[in-house]
Every structure is written in structure tokens, then in C-alpha cells.
Amino acid sequence: MESKLMGKAWAYGDNVDTDVIIPARYLTTSEPAVMAAHCMEDIDASFAGSVQKGDVIAAGNNFGCGSSREHAPLAIKSAGVSCVIAPSFARIFYRNAINIGLPILECPDAVKIGKGDEIEVNLSTGEIQNLTKGETYQAKAFPAFLTKLIGQGGLVPYVRARLGK
Amino acid sequence: MGMTLAEAIIAKHTKDPVEAGAICQVNVDFAFTNDITGPPAIKEFKNMGAERVFDKTRCAITPDHFTPAKDIASAEQVKTCREFAREQGMLFWEVGRVGVEHTFLPENGLVLPGEIVLGADSHTCTHGAVGALATGVGSTDLAGAWALGETWLRVPETMKVVYEGTPSDYVGGKDMILALIGKIGVEGARYMALEFHGDAMYGLSLDDRFTLSNMAIEAGGKTGLINPDEKLLAYAKERAARAFEPLFADKDAVYAKSVTIDVSNMEPQVAMPHLPENVKPVSEVAGTPVDQVFIGSCTNGRLRDLELAAKVLKGKKVHPNVRLMIIPASYEVYREAMKRGWFDIFLDAGAAISTPSCGPCLGGHLGILAAGERCVSTSNRNFVGRMGSPKSEVVLTGPLVAAATAVAGHICHPKEYV
Image 1 (cartoon, each protein chain N blue to C red):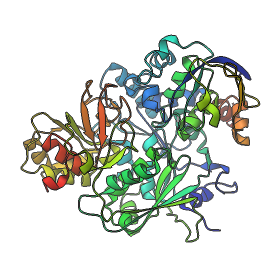
Image 2: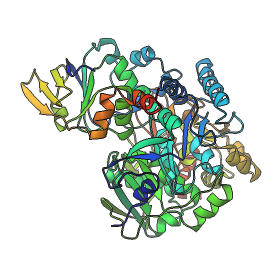
Image 3: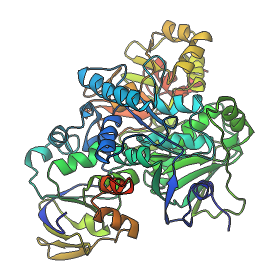
Image 4: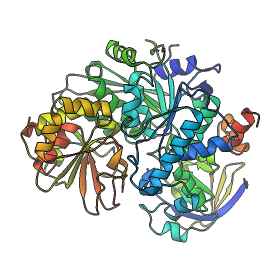
């Protein structure tokens, strides 16, 4: 995982739910390309067609609330988004993002980020630079166990190691 | 210092120190997926290099979301699940012998008091009603639990929710949980466990208690726990698929927050589009026209729910402009409702009765909404596009309001009919 990321921001409000991130009508498959093609469709029909590799999603509270579908972080990751920044995440989405290797940052200042802002993120330190607005924000640190899990590359390598594979 | 029920259950399943906020490695008693979350879990299980599930009697796949298979792609997903389950010798049931997972599993004594239960479905919190620490996870987490028989859990802070007073006959579990979500909001219990207390709560039927626990996730909760009472323990003992040991919160447990809700003068509650926290007493929105009514789902597809619907619908007709979909959540519920003569009441009223499935709740099949349509639903989510077109609307209610609305053609207090 690159520790420094740079991209343009897509900004959304509070309670972005998993039904708008990837509607259930597309859950007859979990193919990353299909997930990416319909990502954010019911909240922002322009997203899937215009998102660029490396772009960042900035949102309000409780991002990813709703379903346990891992298809949601998978859709965002497959669309090329480099990380999601929000003041808070719904707990299942939080676990899922870590497990599949989609970087997420908990930061109360996420709401200051506007659509199109140029954002630089240092994943090692949690420092977020808003180059457009000339501001710097600090994300919360992960608990020690999660830092280890993220460092190992997510849950799959962790379980492989536990199984001695 | 005393423990909450969540802490007591985690302590029984870990060697790590248990305190709110700590991360513990815990043993898992039961781990299941459905037909949507199953295939990604199977893929990750294989990516982990795992060969066998940790215990084939404690690992299950319940095909309930897009079943009976609604199209070729869904049939392929169920086939992937079926073949993996056969290869592993783990629990799997075909259409006709399964049901909506959160109704079917407790009916079959597969989730039990004092246990840790993981489900790759967010409404796994439903099983908190039997006093199990049951919580939803994604497919990769679930695959890890199948492989190791363990997972990591952050010990949640607990919010104590006390229901006081005596509810009217029009108020049940759905109204009580909607009232809570309206009060604390959709992230009011984020990362927390809810623990339900109070005479009004223990006065509920077990079916209503499942409804209460089911929507803990809609307040952001990890689970919706109820300390087992005699009624619940009798139910669990009669059905248990294995031995179990119920656990209880200590009298001096420390709660991060306490909320008290008086149900005495409560009206039936409804959640308006597009968030479960947009809760209003039914009289405030009475008269709002609807196109469809859905009675079913893991929230309100149990026997008590159908009984209430039958009470309203007896001798009545569904409004000519409304489709009423009734979907019993399991074959046990289906058979019993049929035996009691409620199917005749539903059919005479002009309702459609479907085979157990999650169906339209998540916009799967069996009653999808077109643009501009509004549905009153006894399910749990009213997000944009949840039941079909992103231009449709979902209003969440209990079964009494839903059935009354089907007859009236608009949102309606059930006192108009019973």
C-alpha cells in the first residue's frame, strides 16, 4: 500500500448508506468491474463515469451505514478511489474496508473538504493536506491491533499466517 | 465492577482482558452467510488457504435473499454456495426447507443464549433477542471465522434502553424500536451494544423481541441484546441444536449511556423516507397515499406479525389501488399461518402470499417499486432505492399499520379497523 496518496475529492453528506454505494440490484455478482461501474449510482449518477484513479471520497458522519455487503468498499476500491475520509464510519463498513485493503481515515475535518479539492494523504501519519484550501487535517490513529492487521495487508494474509500457509 | 451482557459473553469466549474499547480474540459459536455474501466468503476462504471449516455443525449458508433463484446470475450464486456446502459437509438448506436466516436459525435452535454468533448479514443483531452476542460482518471476516473458529471483536460500550409503562394494543416491538431510533438517530449507538430492559419490553412476545433486536443496526449498534427470561429459555431449550449456557448482565454493570422510553401514551410509529430515524407518530402522516404494502422480512415476517395482519384484514378488502405482498419469513411460520386459516383471510382480502424469501425488502424480487411509487413496508430500511427505483419511497411501520394502510389505500391508524 502506497503511504502517500494524492487525488481530487468527491464530497458527500452524512449517512451515505451501502444501498446507494452499490444497490442490491447489482448483487447478483461480486465482480469488481461490475461493482465499479455502478458505484454511488443512486446518490451521484455522474460518479462512476468521471471518477479518476487516485480520487478521494470525503463524507460526513456514519459513512457506509446499512448492509454488511463487502461489495460496497469493493465497489469504491475497484472504481479507483484511493481512500475514504469521514468523521465516522458504520462499524461493519469499517471492518470490511480494512479487510479488503481500502484505506479509510476517521477525521472530523472531512466535512471541510469540498468537491474537486486536491487532497494529499499520508497514510503512515494520518496527515491530510487540502492543497486547494491550504489546510491540514489530522486523522485519528488506528488501535494497535488494526495497525498490525493493515500492515499485514488485511485479513486474508493474517488468516493465512495463522493457518501456517 | 460488574459486566454488561456483551462483556459477560465476550469474557466467556476470550483469554484477553475484557473492558470496553479493548480488542479481544474470541471463539465463535456459529458463523453463517446468505446467498449474496456467501460466494465472496467462499472465495476469500480459499484465498486464505483454508481447507475445512472449523466445525461443520456450526457453519452454515442460508440461501434466502435472491431465492427461489430470481435469475440466472442468482442461480449461479446459490450453486456456488451449494457446492461449497456439500464439499464441506456444512449446514445448507434448499428452498422449501429454509427461510429468512434471522427467523429460520433461532427457530431451529442454531443460535443460542450466551453464544457469540457471526453472520455475513447486517441484521445478525436480531439474535441478540436470544441473549447471544450476534453481530453482522462482511464476507472476508466471515471466511476468517469459518477458517479459524475465531474472530477479533472490539468490546463495545453498552447503551441500556429501558422501556417503561404499559403500551396500548396498537403498539409492539416495531413501534418501540422505531421510537428509540427516532430519539437517538441512525448513529446514536454506533460501535455500541444495545441492551434492552424494562417491564414493557419483557411483556412483549418473543416474536416482537426479535423485531426489537433486529433494528439495533439501524441505530448503528453492534447487537441488540436481551437478558434471557424464563419465556426465552423455555423457547431455546425446546429447540436447541446443542448444549448452551445462558449468560446475564451483572446487577452492577456499567453502562456508557442509559435511555428510558415510556410507551404508555405511544402511538404506532412510522419511519418516513429516506432514513429509519425520520420517525413520526402515525397520526401525523395519516392520509399519505401508497401503491404497495409489504408485510414480511426478518423484521416482521413472524407468526405474531401475520396474526396482527389477519386481525386487521379479516372480512376486509385491500384498496383497489394497492398491492399487498405478504411473505412469511419461514416455512414454520408459513404452515402455522395456513393452519390457522389466515391464508384464507389474506387471499379473500386480495393479498399476494409468497414463499419465504427476503424478497422486496432489499429490492431483490417479489415486489419491486417503479419510479414515483410509495410502499409501506414492515422491513427495516427506507434508504434511497432500497426496494427498487431510486425515485421510489419506503415508509417503515409495524404489521398493524401496514395492514390498515393496505385497506385504506393511505397511511392509517389501525384503530380504524380493529
